[in-house]
Amino acid sequence: MIPTETLQIVRAVAHFRNFTAAAKHLHKVPSAISYTVRKLEDRLGVQLFLRDSKRVELTPAGEHFIENTDKLLAALEDLENTTRQLATGWEQELRIAVDNVVNQGKIYDLVQDFQAVRPVTELVINSEVYNGSWDSLFHGRCQLAIGAPQTIPDAILNQDRFGWRSMGKMSWDFVVSPDHPLAKHKEPMSMEDLQSHRSICIQDTSRFFRQGYNLLLENQQVLLVPSFRVAIECLLRGLGATILPSHFAKPYIQEGMLVKKDVPDLQFNDGCLLAWNQENMGQGLKWILEWLGSEEWLNKIWLQYDDQKPMGYHVP
Image 1 (cartoon, rainbow, N blue to C red):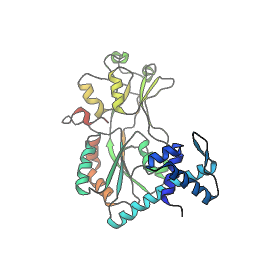
Image 2: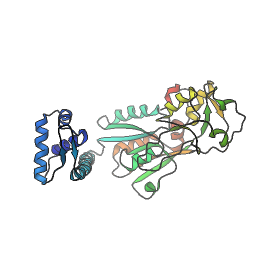
Image 3: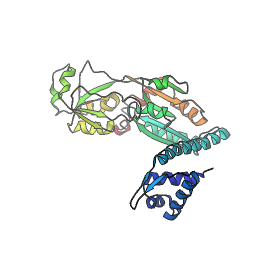
């Protein structure tokens, strides 16, 4: 059987395309890396790498080996985690995706309360946008998604390994800066009124699923940004127009920093979901789902503006 350390060494060489760099990354001497790779190639009877004086490149056999090595190491890690979970009932690690559309400040309370109950379980919190939340859940990058779009991909619907519950309704506002040309445009505005102005769009983090909704019309100029926080900064500078979740836009509108405009034909995702992988659910995920509460509470905490909180509490 090939040792796990050998697999990790080969992966490092494939990543860096250089024995010296791989050795430095793994805190080993280059000769040890070269010896391990050569010994594995002799064992397999195939060449994994093409070598020259500057770089190493994977052969087709090497590409195949690396692809399946990644899957094997992931499976070994999952086996280790699920074995511990079976013995204790608690996960060793819990990965949570927080969609960019929800209030972000509450996640710190969740982390604090969970660590008080189960400090040895590691929490990994990542941000996703639009269908990136579903993509992350489906492909195992998270076990729980907070704020996934209410339109569920068929790949999720066609399997029984996922569960979800509604977080209730949410609203959006079309906003511009006070100095933007649309700020003084007569209302209601049509979609054609928006077409000649730059749309600020949030980059969907989905890697495989269809990209989610953005305010984008045919032949419209686009500014693509990674988050609503960046979108708001661009809005304040008059760099474009977009729609924001109302719980993000409200304080800026109240302070006169952004102007809300009426666009009756504007369509948007008017709700979102709490979703999770219900295979091998441990005590940690069960505890978090109970902590997150009912649809009414989820909506109040994650999708509504709280004027008792600072502005930065809401925006991701």
